[in-house]
Image 1: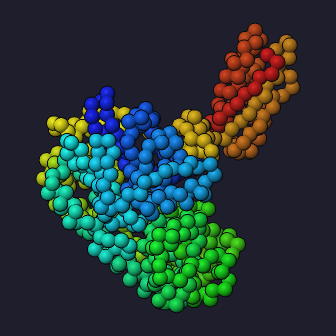
Image 2 (image 1 turned 45 degrees about the horizontal axis):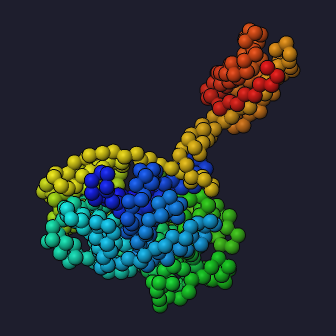
Length: 536
């Protein structure tokens, strides 16, 4: 959910630019949630002074929140041609999504936004047209790297622009806000060219079908796979909506020139087994993605069989390991050979390792280092490295903290409200507004509905009515759970003096406590309980 704010001016007259507007994906602890966005309430309050939203590249964690959050801000958006085209393709695929006017902005371009002059600098990453930003102000220049690495032989585009970074460093850099994702790893990330050679060899030597799953945004990888397939006399089939959307946008912008056309699922039956290469979504274990469906043998048109090969040309995002392993186990059970990055060189990160970070600091020579983009351990490792490299001021920031970069020494001067908001169906709101906490409780311990009817004398009319959802039918002794809860409800009502049964809220609370207590005694868990009192 990358979203950084840069402000210039006194507190009562400060102008802002936003860099990126990303999204995260929900895990099992947010049942039913579709997407997670940064809470932008502070930015909404300042939106009349927001001069621009600048997108560094088209990965979901950097631009995926725009369609939903832009209507709350309505600031000018600047992005590369590929990012702009992909945003438009996403908009066309989402009913009711807003039309966002985007000014295209590429490496080497400069734009003026209020007191800021922003220059785009070419970097290498695992998607077309990534850019770092040199943000110039009257008080100094900040270099915001975005996602980057040093790769002298990238699959697409030019290498990271060392010469321009050195020139900006010569001009003087106030602060470097830099990617920390691989700050724990020594050395230099392998080149995309090395991965391409390895994948080409695997495809050439495979006997059956070859299926490769990768991030759909890794257009360079997809192009390399297609080239290797063509050289080996194979045809490439694309599977997965996001994979096809990315490939279509890339083709429109000329990134797929010289390649044979991709095939679709309907062509699968006409491709000889030894001539098929399938590039598909599902590298993170998504249960509805193409790879998971093949692993469950649930796809109506495409299937894998014993002797085929599946390559995970990707890394597991933390938290997705179990879902990915489930798919791998399904594939192995089918007799499919599974290849991962620890088996052969089939994936390389798009982020800098420590030697690449050292080079960036050598080029830029900032007065202030601010580690960004990573978990706490990555940020701290990056901060430690910056100190080792002699950076005079290293500022460790966390979400919501505001740091003054100039004038005077850097200092954390404020903390603004931050957090998460959730897209749930057509609605967006906080955890409480969306009922996610209660939904999580329901997923753990179920729900019991109780109807208690009292007559004019405040006696129970018949037995209480119980409906259980998500509870076991019997307790550990084999006794009927519903009957035990009915007895607990009746006992709770009987224990209330008749004069006090006139208070329906008191009756509700007594019954709720009794049901939760009985369930806990019989089961060891306390369900959610709704009690309806009639006639009191």
